[in-house]
Image (cartoon, rainbow, N blue to C red; front, side):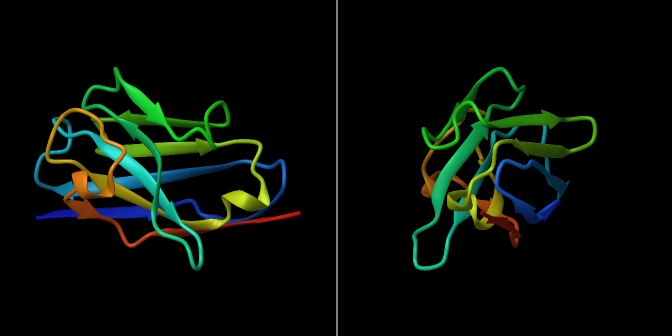
Length: 124
């Protein structure tokens, strides 16, 4: 079993920043790609960012490219999402997810373990 626990969400004004963390426990972490997704009320869960097992490859949704940065610390079993220049459109519950594979994916179906999510609210 794998447990993923997100933290760092909260409320911020437009233009502000937040840093999300996802702590993993249980089975291996360092050999797995990780991803961040988000879901706003009434919307489907959407891809935000992903990172390969060693951090060598990252992928971003067009809507966050240049503003968000995904990173990981395998020694701490933690993946991060630095979010800058936030806008109200970024308001959502953010989920961390683990892939069984070491390479990245933008598809929700490509991830086998999910955290419970952390709320991010951006006010104008």
